[in-house]
Image (cartoon, rainbow, N blue to C red; front, side):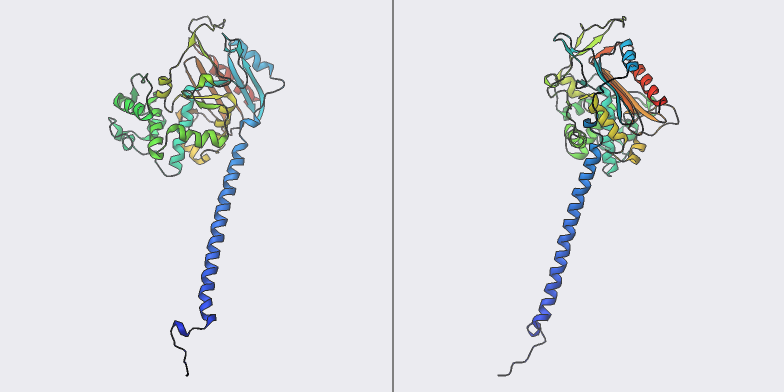
Length: 390
């Protein structure tokens, strides 16, 4: 019987059949290789970022064998109690603890002591929000009503207004009992005050940053604590940083807050102990419920200034200056060549000033709050001394 080849599939030769199969195999292999390359490159990029971040970790901040006597004398003259860290061009020039961390127990402050940073936390909250804006998940022009529709006048107030504390918003006393983040935010929304005459007028009011912390939570679907831990604490490898309500007093190197309420600033008085409840710490969402060591705080602020958390372009937008005058934006005051801010309360007082390179700066962290606090004066004098010797 004579069989003839059909023109259909059955009539194709083995070579003709193998060609499309071979082509598909090659295409598939290319896709697999491409995916592997992309995956590996992402790992490499992540590792590079990790290494870059490690350049600004507490591992590089070590105690000086011999501290600068000039700074020691200055701090002694203002009865500084706490930890002082001074860095010049990435080199530690002064790092020392002064006074008692726990007077009753006889424990003294040292370079590992941890302190409540209060309003200095605003600078971190602002950066966490700006990272979302950088990633196109929010806009500075977004009205706060987009996230909290019940706020009176919220449609006229942008996230930028709140970052600059020019929103006209303020609040009554913070809740005192322990609440969830949602309950804290609902409390502020229900008790908020909107004054149109204060729009575009700077007025420090923590509720702006309480609500911005809430915006972060709403966008990410995660708690502020989770965002902070992922983007800041774990990324930078911070070991002496955490949330006050999570057993601060039980942490190693924890401090007790004291306050001097009388006018005699020449004698350090450890009799007035300041206590803070868990509820008070929880209500300071995004604005003052974190503790840190001096080295950790310097690490964070230096990493921010260097563009390690958000890009330098985003940072410039967040911390834009108003000519050469101090301008509050993004949780700090920005001047021509430096950033600075402070925060006090519950017996603690913290202040930092850093040049815009993130390589030179001063951190003073105290567990002894004084009237007319001398910390800002001392930090500025030290910073100016460093700056003049460059």
